[in-house]
Length: 367
Image (tube, rainbow, N blue to C red; front, side, top):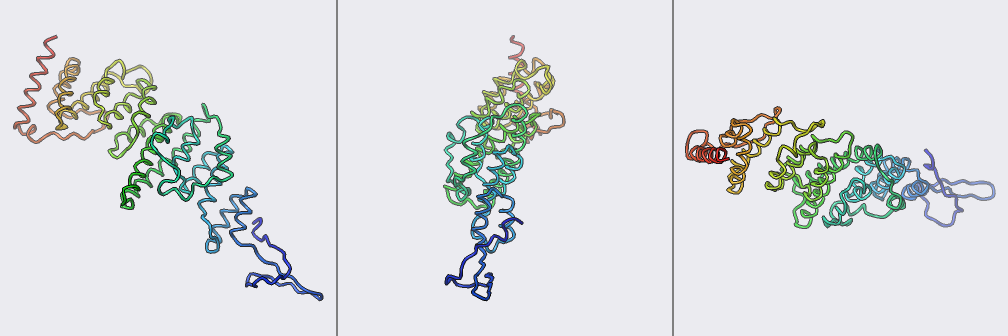
């Protein structure tokens, strides 16, 4: 391996001998060949951009290396980024446990504008503080970010998706393990998760093809912390194709009025691939209104009662299902719906259901 035997030649000048010294004696004198420290060898390798050799030396001489190998990983990651190797860079950022905002800032074509600033994230927060030094490689990466568009943008998005997916799992694991016991660390992790979840949505939308199913799955996760005001414009720009993830975003943030304003056939259906047809639209709307009706929140039940007539007018069976809790299948996707026992057994809940249905019929036939 290059530079592994890099030695400093010096005259015997009174230094303390060690077992690693090599003494060379001749007729007229002698000298000592002394091995430089592992730390110095690693630094020399980094200075000459021999990152793989530096990492190999860190691994083989772990007991003698007094530095942080993650700093070596991170410097290599920034160097790979500058070369356009986003896949390799992502793996080494993961090895280095690089702060997610540091990676997000390198992809302004993907990151929603001012995301890091608006979330109040700092480079010295939490678990990632030890790695936030401005190395030569990082400085070069920040000063020469490539312009990404088209195929290069999709490739970059696919590469860093794995970084944010794994970082999200790590942050959730740290939180669930109870390692965030004090308020500041808990707040920091929440901010990090908000950035990571928001970046994940933005990244998946830039993949080719867009990973819509993954977007919907994340937005349906009760633990997600996506920032509504950053993600909503990205999804709204996709028109009918992105109607379902946009509706899940509004629903997850309890923005039900915004969701119901969007939930009209002209905005959610289309002839383009990936958009809903009329049947899919009506079934999704019915399931959503069912969820609102049985949520136990008076404001939600009022919204369900207000918007059910449009469903009943298009399909009486679906309109009644809003209040009876009848399962409405959407391509085998079962949205959890807790129908109160009193409705199932004909108690007071059933009486309320009948009253709602009567009101519905009156509204429908009044037109």
